[in-house]
Image 1 (cartoon, rainbow, N blue to C red):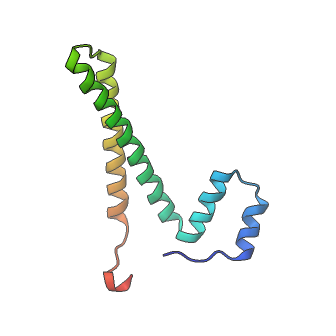
Image 2: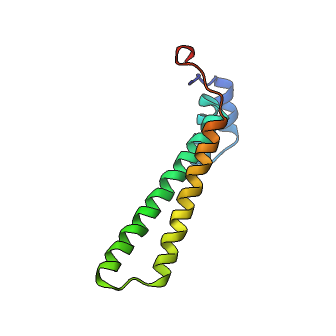
Length: 106
């Protein structure tokens, strides 16, 4: 659940002179909580890994059609799949360890 940030919290963040990305992450963490920030990071990791896997798979499929698939491309595909799989497992572990509230309580 999102909560408003107080002026004192915003002033404290501004005084830290954080780069833009870190500032936005700090604001997000204050608004939504640290666990929401971790969940966002895990989802981003999963999405980036899925994109890399998709790209590697597309390249392998195209190369296999004309017989020019190289061993390093298979290694890249395997590594991308393992990275995606690890990201999905980390996200699932995080989501299963979070306490759930009944729908009426939200």
